[in-house]
Length: 92
Image 1: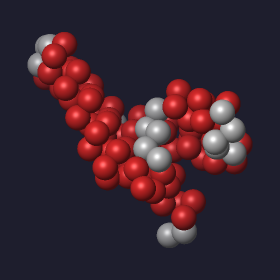
Image 2: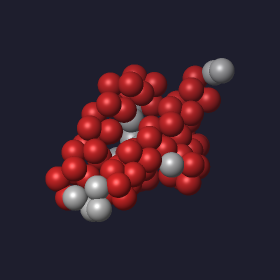
Image 3: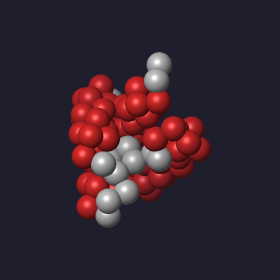
Image 4: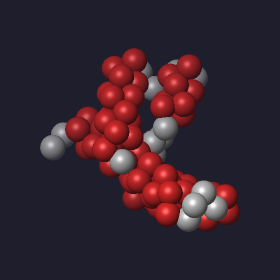
């Protein structure tokens, strides 16, 4: 697996876990705001430590758009990140 595949897979996995854990917590706690907030927050922190070195841990298309606008991400990487994030969100 090359560098590009690793970072796109990391984004897919991170987004999938964020959606799965955050939305799953909201579903099973009957939308308890505090529990849902903790689930989303802890998911982001766990993914930052886990995949941050590979991909930068965007795990959200809005973050990828911000990186593109600030010219910290090229258009080819941007497209790869967005595709991986959407696939991860659907899988989650």
